[in-house]
Image (cartoon, rainbow over all chains, first blue to last red; front, side):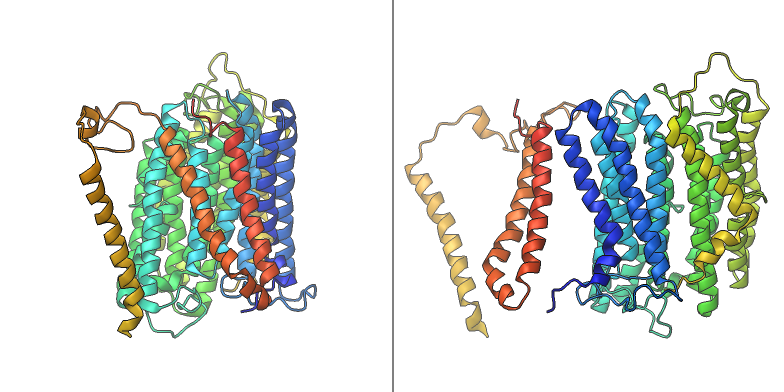
Amino acid sequence: MDFRLTTTDLHALLPLVILSAGACLVLLIDLFLREEARSRVLPPLTSLILLGALGAGIEQYISLSPGSFRFPSERLGPLLTPIWRHQVFTAVGAILLCGIALAVHWISTSWLREEDRPAYGEYQCLLLLFPIGTILLIGARNLMLAFVGLEIFSVALYVLTAMRRTRSRAVEAGLKYFLLGAFAAAIFLYGSALIYAGKGTLDLPDLGAISREGLPAPVGLAALGGGILFLALFFKASVAPFHMWTPDVYQGAPTPITALMSTGTKTAAFFLLITAARLFPHEILPLIPILAIVSILVGNAGALRQTDLKRLLAYSGVAHAGYLLVAYCAIALGQGHQDAHTAIRAILYYLAVYGITNLAAFGVLAWLERREESVLTFEGIRGLGRRNPFCAAVLALAALSLAGIPPTAGFWAKYQVFAAALSAGQTTAAVVGILGSVVGLYYYLRILVALYFEPAPEEARIPAAGFAGALTLGLSGAAILLFGIFPSLLVDPLIHIRL
Amino acid sequence: MLADYVPILILLLVVIGFVVFNLAVSEILGRRRATRGKASTYECGIDPETNARGRFSVKFFLVAVLFILFDIESVFLIPLGVNLKAFAAAGAGTFLLVEMILFMVVLGLGLAYIWRKGGLEWD
């Protein structure tokens, strides 16, 4: 066997190498530097590492796009070929996840300052481990590597969720997430084992992932394994009826971590759902539109009754997983490549927009959050439009985008998703999705009402946001508008996506 | 075919013989003084029957987890140590050595972390 790493291999792994080395460095600094030096060095260093990884991802994207002459041979060496997919798809995933982690890092700077123990090193180190795991999950060609990635980012998230270990809510959230997540991981592993028993390989393209038309459908053990594997992925993407953990965990976790969970985990899970689409057992394919419809109904119905904003966004996340599944129907049930690729682009666009929007919403919440927990309710944001117009404007934009109102990016995301489903003949799911968005309008507009049409309570202190937090909010707010007015800015880069 | 299994059979006999021998020797030579603690079920130093809501020291588990971590390290290191010359002859020596050093650096970082954070202090 040939054990050499080629330059292409290193190029393919560059974001991961930067992140891993950075995580080790951050941990070392946390151990051997004094408190005040640490709090001065670590945040900029973490930003730098994440920016580096983001840059590496963008560089990969550019050099992998057709028409680029940077790297004459983009074929991986003998070591990486069986386990890694060096494609535009992976690069897009790396860009998305590094961007999400960077935004979360920036919105957590002000939040950390409000904490009693700003546990610096561990927080940043785990924040760097999250994109490592998710990028491994997305780029993996082999299900075992995908499992390793799943575990890396899940363990990082369990710890981050329970970071505020003196609070009962955080401990409850951490324990719930850990127990259910560990079960999901075990189920994922069990599914892979059954697939291996049935097919004799864990290589995704060999298993008949989407690029190989005409392979026989998985039968017997492999079909069972595929179904089980999807169960675990649906859990991670918080698709109903596997969503029970979502509201409690989102509420108990630190707000920036909730943002990471709701955007990053969903992105990674849907990327793997797309790559593993052909593993879903054919006998129960009609379940996917049903799951989409159930998620939309459960998510929207649950969100209607919430007063806590984090719980509301959790249920709205379940509904959004449903909308994403509507487009996923076109991949799983649609006829031919054209439908599938339209749907993949729609899902990636949706994930990017949903990521930006949710980061904006949770960014505002993280800014407002103080040591008392009562603030993140409709009561807490009353009259924010007058108290802090900038915060209120970003939150309002995010709510409009989540609802899918035209001048925002959320509208185009929903439009593409439903258009992809309709062109693949998934009418029922698309119609339920559109009706669900109308119901969703009610609770998103309640946020706007609380922001602008209700009087502000007396003596409400708003902590200082810090430059990075304000920058993130400003950027994401601007992006929501920009991609809403010029959707082609985000659509065009996704054209080269192939599986 | 079946002759290949003879070493396993021998190992099995040795293992069973070892257990029987030790049990017999301690049965013959050992003194018996029953105490309350000896009579109760042994479960990693914790009283087996108490209120489930009671608090217990986490130290044992910490040590156990750390032990597993470094135990696994040796599981990876020893096969490499045994086979490194063969790999070097096949031209993969440097690669595997670098890989293993990276692995140990990461583990060492973990050890440093535990140490600095006071995970190794018993009291």
